[in-house]
Image (cartoon, rainbow, N blue to C red; front, side, top):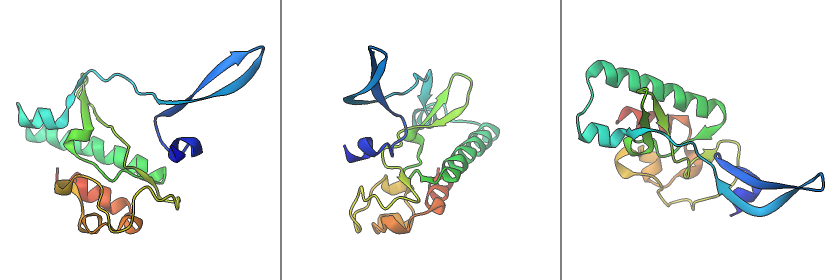
Length: 146
């Protein structure tokens, strides 16, 4: 819950109520997310697959999304087809930022020596549990093995 209280988590919104013109923060937090009409990229790859040109377009769009996160000082730490939705317009969207970490933060959500993420998509330093050494190249690695 500490992560919610500090506001260091994307997709988290605090419930606010209006009472007598004064705004008060309720003690409840929730995750707000848009409904995405589409399917997980993992399902798509397992089913009909994608043509080479479509795959290149999807990877380019995902690379742009990962780059945007990095410019916001966020490391995703679990880029994989199962955490990517492809919407009805054929645009990929990165989802599930539960393992994401702010580059500038000293917040320890995991212990050193403990690997977090999906092994098949993790760079070697992440497999070794070297969480504090992870940088943008970790997400780039994960994107490359898709």
